[in-house]
Image (cartoon, rainbow, N blue to C red; front, side):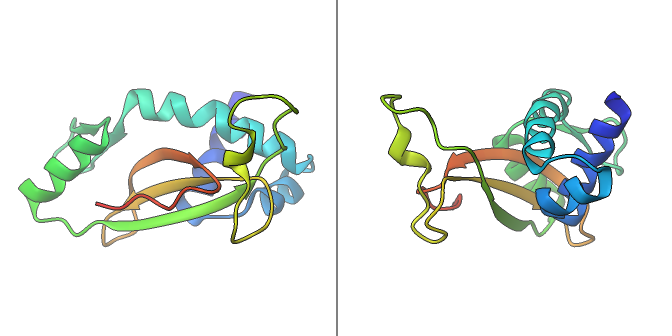
Length: 136
């Protein structure tokens, strides 16, 4: 059901709950939760993240986020999480890019930005595991 998929994604984004914990809550495999989040996040990003004040303002890109923060004097908090993923098939380009030196596993790093109240402003900057988190 799509509402369950959306709820799981929003819980992950808001609370930073690991995919394995969400899998336990929903009674599914961790890989299923990872697939659901990969499916729903682009849909959220395409719609933009709504900012409560002023209503109607949506942040669709990192440039929008930084422009909003500069204009409104909002301090942005950055959170990066590393999620284990299946190793890409042999012979596939970029296979080694997913190996994290920190976790010694195949991972992707997702970056989420929030305001001082913990409200998610933007999420969806995804990088292979060996790359550093976003910096500016």
